[in-house]
Amino acid sequence: MMNTFDPHALAIDLAEVRKVFATFFAARKQSDWERRTEKFNQGWTLRQTVAHLDAVGQAYQHAITCALAGKPCQFPGMIQRTDLPTWNRIQIEARAPIPISTICESFLNTLRQAEELATQLEPASLTRGTHVPFYHRPITIGELLGGLAAHPGMVHGAQVANGAGVTPLWVHFGPDMLSRQITRFFHLMSLAYWPERGGNLQAVVALSAAGPGGGNWYVTMAPEGSQAAEGKYQRPSLRIWFRDANALCRALTLQISPLRSLLTAQTFAWGDLRLGFQMEWLFNPA
Image (cartoon, rainbow, N blue to C red; front, side):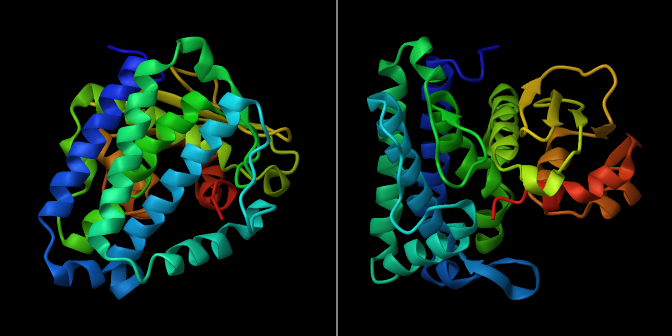
């Protein structure tokens, strides 16, 4: 199995994400684009969600350019992470007059550029980082390239599918790729931790999923921030087991509540259960 942040693995997975989205876009009817992506006809429309993916993809590309050049990474209108909701709104509104076909093509081109860049970089380059205003710690080039695959394919993989009335897009990933995508998701999740909300919290959540695409991961929480890694953790504060990778992905993307997941036996948890119910608040990007 390839290393999650190996340039070759990143290039292959970015190409697969691009292929999955290209197929998804091509199958959409005009009426799909105005459908809401959350329950009870709430949330962004599918069009707005894809506009967001395009905006974040370009932001990640900008951050990679800054990291490679050793320069600070700045975004107009965003000084601190609390500016993120306003930045998201402005970026979506700026794309409102643009045909959806153009937005889709721009997003796919960003993935293609990231794929080409991954094939050119040496592994050592991937550890170079830069600070961006919407994360609590510097993000590495490897995490940025991984984020270009995991942000659309995992973070919003169910949301875009909801807008089209289809199954989450991660079902199209092979088991090994799905496991790598989950690892990348946890890295993005750890970057989004709020140390000011956690305060003096010192905790580790260990998560595992059975079956194809599954594995073992853990996320740390401390006053200085959060980190994520693959593997087992011997004595975590909270241990969460999922019956399969799809159940884990649905929980991570808030497609099912922690309580419902427990009641339907998709999840079992041991340890500090209160911590599990706090995680959405502690790791909410905005």
